[in-house]
Length: 121
Image (cartoon, rainbow, N blue to C red; front, side, top):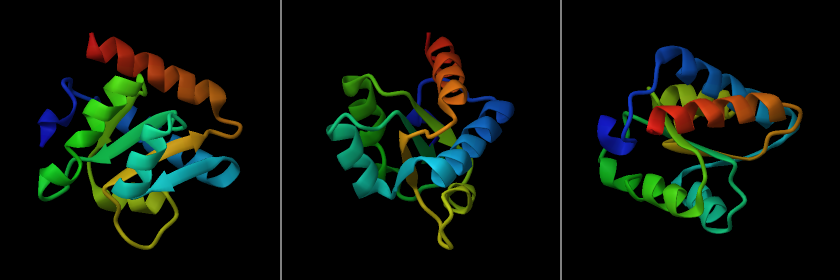
């Protein structure tokens, strides 16, 4: 499952990404779930896509990194669906989240996107 993105995401960055989801949920806009995230990416409105590493079967989310690359949208992973669901403010686990509007966390989003592009090199 680590093969979703072609680089290793450091633990600290995973925490920063999850915090950003929490901030975007509060003041901005997020899309939750593989179908909603896919639509946001296809429409070009997603600014960051996060995928849980513990998705089973992995085929459920395997199209997302390719789609993000095609649309030039930063894409990364977090450890669990549970963490992603909690930060998204829902009571169930979720495989993927897209930040559509980061609200007041514009600077944080830019920093994370920059770190991800450096890791991807």
